[in-house]
Length: 255
Ligand code: G
Ligand code: G
Ligand code: NA
Ligand code: MN
Image (cartoon, rainbow, N blue to C red; front, top):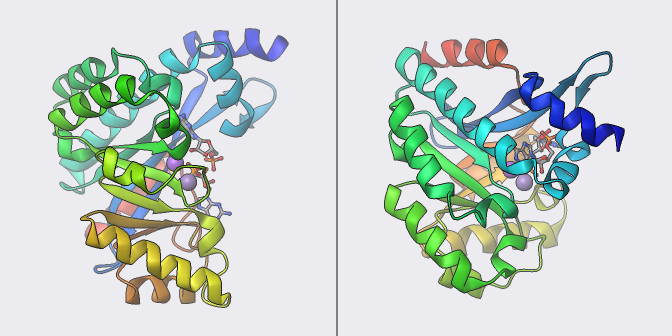
């Protein structure tokens, strides 16, 4: 209960921060995007990771204003970075199921893009498989509205949820993010190698790009590049970083 009270206060007191983890093109080795990841700078406690406050925020309904806050913050920052360093940088923002079920979401995104001057192609929403098991009649209009804006949608943690492949047919998904549990085991575990190859082949054949998360080693990167995967994200290149450190990476990236 104390955490709940603190959480509500945290938004008005500006205690949330956005960290950014770079996404790297496997063909050019350059930074092509970033995932925005929330942190809570709790006074006298320090940085609280999202696993400890996102679930509670969902329960108490705080995820709606909090989700809107990070979306706007990440778009503002990305527009600055596009002007200064990297004109094609794409920002990925995690959207929880509760947010996606908010019929006001597409309108809010449209307003933020307009306010910030960010083109819709510079924004990607990361959703999880669990969302797709919801009521399709409620979900499809939101997908449609988001696709009409020109924003792309990525399916996060792909391969671990309970969704079926038919969801890929039913929903307009642009990118699959292969869960790090597969990546961790390559190239040593033959089953993970086969599954990763199959996911990439299927996605590319269906016109979706593939991002590998949790890349921690050079041989994982080489394997993915050889397998037709487009992007990687993981500690091998960089952890999630605060604004100033990410900016340093970007400025090195343009040289
Ligand atoms: O950054 P870290 O690996 O600690 O994140 C842990 C989890 O929290 C990840 O699954 C990530 O998707 C989730 N997360 C981080 N930031 C956000 C956010 O802004 N919104 C939502 N819904 N989830 C987030
Ligand atoms: O669940 P989601 O895919 O949104 O998770 C994002 C989180 O994954 C980030 O908070 C980050 O801390 C974590 N992460 C990013 N790269 C790596 C990695 O290479 N290895 C591990 N173990 N975790 C990672
Ligand atoms: Na994510
Ligand atoms: Mn993930």
